[in-house]
Image 1 (cartoon, rainbow, N blue to C red):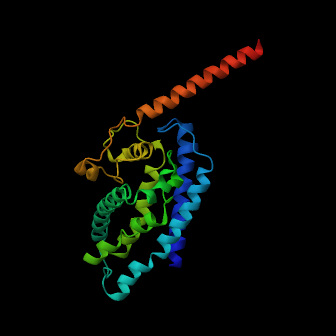
Image 2: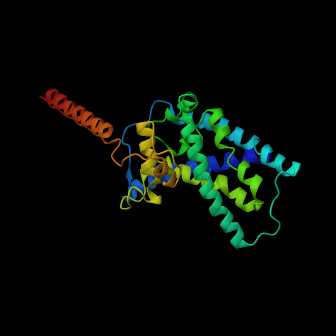
Image 3: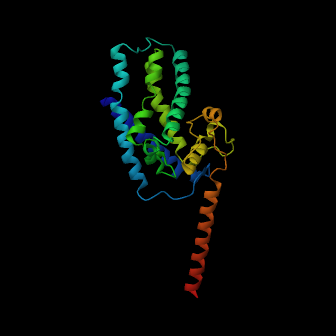
Length: 255
């Protein structure tokens, strides 16, 4: 449990800080990609996200007692001396399962019964890399259960299981970055995950998937690529009008 706390805390802060540096400082200066939602962050948003994420890190870290418990009780076992191809295959399977598990829980969290527990995450209408673990404790517990079902049906290697929180958080940071890294790829491409999740936060529904699109396609919950266009156009128009008013006020003062 102690190692779990250190592990989840380190990857959250590491990936979050790297995501912020890349999307706020480096890529815009290089002219690579673009910001998806130009609206400003809400007051105190980053502080709130980090605070909520600290609780999630505690739940994920302390929650390591459950997979450990499955191993101690003999309900699950680790593969002994797995080969490289087996580890790679298990990681691929777990990546697909991670998307299925996320979609199911995310869809439940948007149901009438559980919506209020997902509200803290959606306070970040404009998401940031630090939004990734910004959950209500119940949501953190639901998402943190991802390893338990597969461990009951297959003897996975330690490295395959350990990879799940790493690639999960990496994809989560990309999805919450509010940045389009690959502007030329289609909206349905795997590399357009940040576009899809940006729309989920802007529209408060739809695009419940994680990195891939197959669950949203299968259940008809995929948003159109222009789902938030009216909101963004209204913001840009307001900003343009405000700039025009400030310009006129400046001319009047100068006169």
